[in-house]
Structure formats: C-alpha cells, structure tokens
Length: 218
Length: 114
Image (tube, rainbow over all chains, first blue to last red; front, side, top):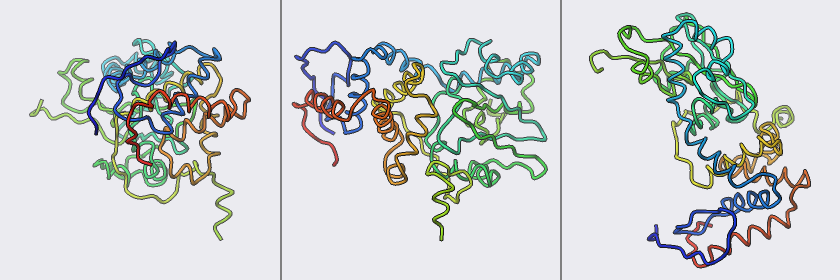
C-alpha cells in the first residue's frame, strides 16, 4: 500500500464525495456508486445529508440493541408477551426505531423448539436491531443449506440440538424479518438485565448458537 | 437434461441447493460499500427503488454476474439498471459522471488491480 498523503482539493464541490485523503484511485464500482449518488442528488431526488444521516444510522445499529431486547424479555414477562405479539412495537418500546418498512417477528426458543433464521433469496436480516448481517449469512452455503439440513448447519457452528427438539427455520423476506429470542441459560437467576444482555450474542439471535453461561468464568 | 431447472429456479433462488461447508467469513464494509448500503436505504425511503425491486434487479443481472461480482457490486449495478429502466438516468449520463468523478483522482497513482 502506498503512503498516505494529503490530497489538495482545488476544485469546487458543493456535494460530498469520496474520502479526502486517498492513496489509490477508486475502483470501477466505487466510481459508479459516487456517480449514481451525485446524479440523484443533483436531480434533488434526495439530499446528501440523507446519505450521511443513514450512514450514521447504520453505524449505530449493533447486536447490543437486540441483546437489550432479549434481556428485557427474559426479565419482564409482560414485555415478552408484547414482544412476541408484535416484535416491532416491542422493540420500539425500548427506543429502537425502525428506519424501514419491515415487520419483525420474534421467535422464542423453548425446550421443545429451536429457531433459526435465514434469507434464502438474498440477505434480509433484522438490521434495525442487529446491524448488518455477517458475510456468511449472505453467502450460498448458509442460504442454501439452512432450510434442508439445519441440524448439519448448526453442527458446523458447534451447536448440537437434541433430536427430540423441533428445529424451525424461518425464511426472511423484504418486509418480514425475524429475530430469535434464545433461551435464558440456567444459573443466571442472580444476574441483572445488563449482565444478561452481555451474554447475548448476534449469532444466538440468528439462532446458530445458544446462549451459554459459565459461572466459573463469570 | 437439467435445463428445466434454469426455468424453475432463478439465480437467487438457492434455498435447498447442494452447497459446501459454511465458511464463517466477515469483513468490515469498505467506505464505498457502506455508502452503497446507505444509498440503498435512501432509495427505499423515497420509493425510488424498494427492497424487492433491488432484489429482482440483482436477480436480473444473470448467473454469471451474480457469481462474479461482490455483494455491493451487484447492488450498485442493479441500481444503475433500474434507474435506466425507470427513465431516471441514462447510461450516457452515468458514463459522463463516472469520468468526471474519476478525473478528481487524476493526480493519484493508479494502483488498482485490473
């Protein structure tokens, strides 16, 4: 990689564009993104500020939000029933805004049912509560196999689900997204809501792992 | 033999296909990828291109492009095609704008891989 250097900007620009300090020319698709965006902004179809704001929104969404929802559901039975009734309004109660038109269905894991989410057609994911999906969620092996051999898929994540537990795989769409409500691990009765939230990982809310608790390590 | 599957299943429709081991890959989005994602969201908010149109736009790139382009490369090409189809942009306008944007980097050494 070449050394970073200050890049003089002597041309006028009334719109933002690629980073001011660059050490290589943008690639073809990077140029295409900038060109499409700037053309649409010039046509006043939206403002540059909307893109900036949305980047901030994307940066603000992490699995910590979903973990907060899960921990609340574990500690507040009334909240949990409202959440299972309507995932979106349940999350909104905790101040998590939905910046898109998607509905959220929260799927509760129980001793009898383990849930797994996938998007076979593309990469639909509960982004308002988990942020952007990991690459493996968007790649063929997971999308192709989760629906017909979920137990084998789960084994690859180190998760063994007993044969007498039903596995339900939910396939997301452009407007319906899912979030798994994992089972609260045993031995966590003494933990408060924030401590519980710390146990909850992104992959547990996708359903590829279970939430674990090691009292010795804690 | 096998050609009927090309009709039954479009390139995106891979649920149930045979596939290899899940490699648990992740990467931080590149700056342009994040901008592309924000662009997608803003296009959806304004109902210029909604999520389902985007998905179909990617699907209509065909199997070869879907296989060879990266995730956000597919998105931006799909957006351009959809904007052409809707008469919002023309290919000529996009080409001119891309040259203009590229010109801003004329004093930067070209280290791109071809």
